[in-house]
Length: 142
View 1 (cartoon, one colour):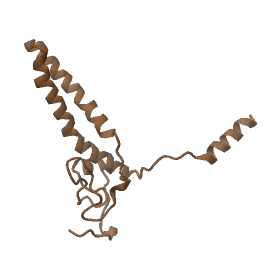
View 2 (spheres, helix red, strand yellow):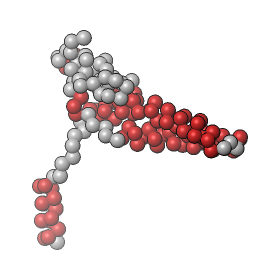
View 3 (cartoon, helix red, strand yellow):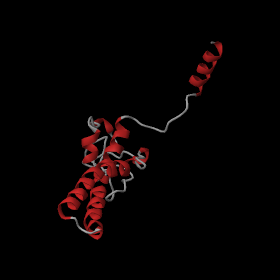
View 4 (spheres, helix red, strand yellow):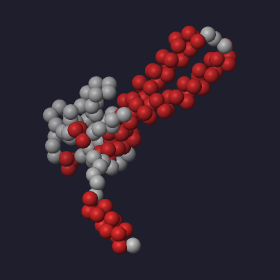
């Protein structure tokens, strides 16, 4: 499908969580956000939004591990207390379940963070030199 650059026809997302979890474009909510499982597309295939603004960095991995850790620990404790297996059972069962849970959470969390960046118009932080200069001047007067 040829990208349509007339953005007036599209309604940007009002809920970046749902749009991101579905892997949809935050501007038109119809195009795909991902080219592969975790790789962002270069642009939306419907409205042409350039995804170069998106930089979720390590956020998806951090949240994925944090979310998966509690159920994984509960699962490991249940196995240990119920069956008292040797350590190799945990390596063959608990470790793969934990890794799979983390990997399954990565894509929806990455989509959510990218859509949130678009929704909140996030950009690289800058130091407000004028504000700092006025604060330093104000403090020197006191």
